[in-house]
Image 1 (cartoon, rainbow, N blue to C red):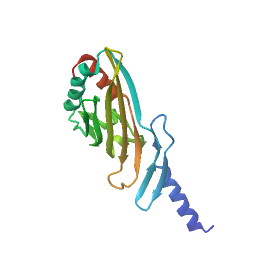
Image 2 (image 1 turned 120 degrees about the horizontal axis):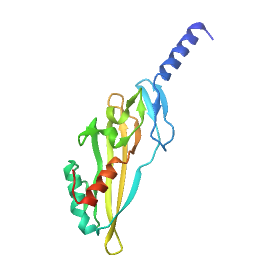
Image 3 (image 1 turned 30 degrees about the vertical axis):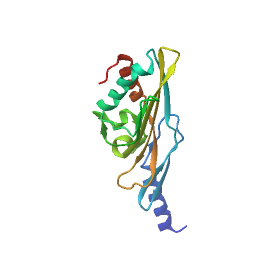
Image 4 (image 1 turned 90 degrees about the horizontal axis):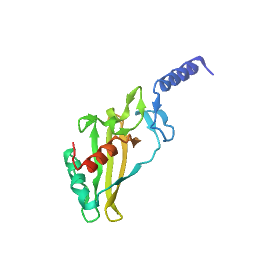
Length: 180
């Protein structure tokens, strides 16, 4: 190997090592590649589906669920009062949402010590449904998933998982009949 090739190889190895990436717990490790467009981060993960019990029938909880979405400025792309299902399948977020960093509700990993959820363009899917359980209770089913794309080099996405905070806030709002 020629000395100039060895130096170039060492420089490239040093550049790629400067971009440490961590992915959300439970997801596969990220792959980082340097391309002509910049750094490409590929990670795999799955959406989070959570189920909670509420001691009120769906019809009694539905108004609080609708209020929860409205209080956070989430427009409905899914709204079906007959099946008690509501949500948004493509909510676009940038840096902050509902008064907090996006990383408070989604974990997309980190790059160079910064939260990807707080620096990339995030597209989140939030769907919730109420299912009758017996005669006087409900089951709240919430699905949260997301992807994050680097706004400056962005044709690749990183999968994001829920931190659980959004589901807990929703559950509390439904149990108390109030929202934020």
